[in-house]
Length: 337
Image (cartoon, rainbow, N blue to C red; front, top):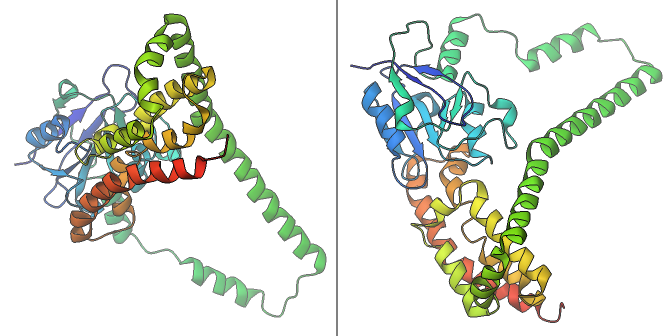
């Protein structure tokens, strides 16, 4: 017996509330959090009567996924499932962010959710299943509109025998170019305001805290000796690439951002030799993207068997290529400074 629940945004969260109800076909709660099935996903499954599934071990058709539970810090994952029309619950307090921010709306997305933000509901006016599945059913029942190819064919027949003059053709080309440039400019501004400027503010704030608190001196005495040697950086890359840790360290690239900022300040102060800058970059980035592997395979419409073997294969590959990338970077940095 399936039950209806309401999911509200937690402290500092955004979006929602989402009132959802499973169906016989759409009843899976997909957990894409890198550490097995997250407690929030398990709680949703228990309260709705649905089934919690680890997104790192298997994939599901979109029309079977009721809710996707993610822990994205503002990169692609928080927008991937809203783009697909699937309810998305983010564990992190993130609003409209990332390259897919335009798909993130309060009707389909909620963030900063904990187990205490999930409630039973008796509201009956909501969509059953996920919005994408409901839209597909509605579209199947409605009369099918003409396809783009059919519309073009009809326009071509109507214009048959008519020849456009050179002025009209030039006007169409110019109008198309202007529209493309205008859209590109708008997308660029949205990306800068929504992603790049907040990151710059975060970096400036972190550097200010380091300088004012004296944390830089502590880092210089602890981290600098490790990052001043090739074996130390190889060890960092190896630890970051461990398959159990890399999906946990990857979300939002937060770890890489913080450590990169800390190391950058030490390079600037001269506590770490400049020739180790390139190897250090690869050392702290061995885990980047490991949390996105199942999502990327899902976007590529990979089979369940492909995801089952592909995810661990890529994770173990990072364990090998992470330290190897540090050594290659060190070789290429010889003589650079």
